[in-house]
Length: 505
Image (tube, rainbow, N blue to C red; front, top):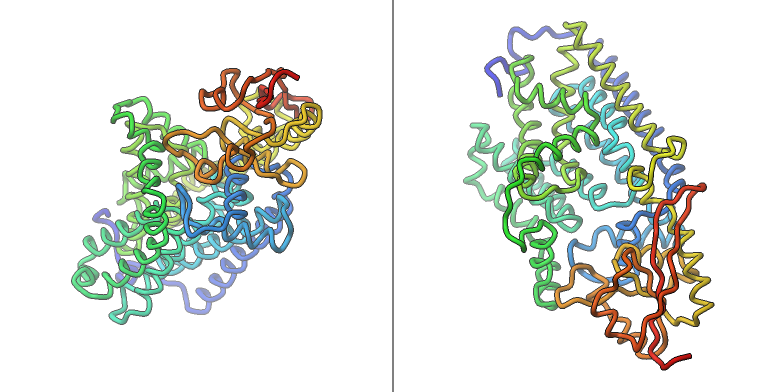
């Protein structure tokens, strides 16, 4: 933090009369609540506008195979999808229902946290930024891991801010429970423990907590939630560690690719919106740009830096998906709102820069919510991954009937999951089996076990099939290619085969 950072009660701070404070606070609270309510209604309606993406269908399959843990994540998302589909059936709305509610809960948590740290005004603008930032605005309609664990991350940050003032266990245990629920969603939630420890090291009055039982009770409580993952991995010979090495490309050695860093930063600017991202970097590099409460500023920054910094360093080796940093922006956007709202009130150019940043982010989000009118080429349109699966399933169903195939195999787990969701009756689908399981479908009963006889319809994204598939059948007959269309545009191409177990027919 910079030398110009001051405590909120320093003599230089000008305070509005109490009545004006209450009136302004009520205005900003009502404004934030309106944004969250309107956003919730919109995303509930919009959630059925797009088909499921591969990850969502994959997690939907988890919800149909109850377990205490899964290959790469805890069971939280499967529980929520199971609850949603129990209420609304095996539908897109049922899959995404709790994602929208959790995204709204994140917005409420963000307001509460920013209000605790700074003011109602800062809290409103932090929520307003999250409303228009593409990362949150588009992601709020999708049932992804990040939507769930960011919710727990936000509320754990709220609880820890209260816990740091306590010597009793209550708030420390609550923080630990919220951290643990985050771990049941995504193991990256553990990074927030680094943020909390770093804050205690940096903030002298909180340094005492590191020597108290309460801090370690918080960590112990959180780690208890890893017991299901440990038990499950023990039962399955520890496949998660192998998967994590593969997911980060660490099983092939550590590389050094400086160009990946530029791509990483460019993608971050894209998902957060360029001007908002640049504004955040500016205030991070110039923390003395404006006087704000020093402790609150430090806490917001330390909620951002460990997670963002981890992926920034990691990007030298591996270009990770841009949404992996989502939780870091809870602290980042609050920090930016605290700095920029006051700065904009005294510098007209900063006010216009903020207006421009909001306008650009809003336009970017509006475009991303519906891209058909842009007529973008395939592989350029980001929404193409949420289109065409229903059409593909209809074609696959017809070929099943023509060929007499008993079951469907796909050459990747996302296609298999999407077909399972969109094929009539939601049948089990399968993937090729490898020596090292890289997705959950490989750990479930294989097509050889479930269908020891009968032919298979094989759906592949590549013309060349894996060896394990080729040796599973007496012969494999190519059926040709299928171009999947959406509103007249090609959004995918697949190769169809039929795997025969019998002789010539």
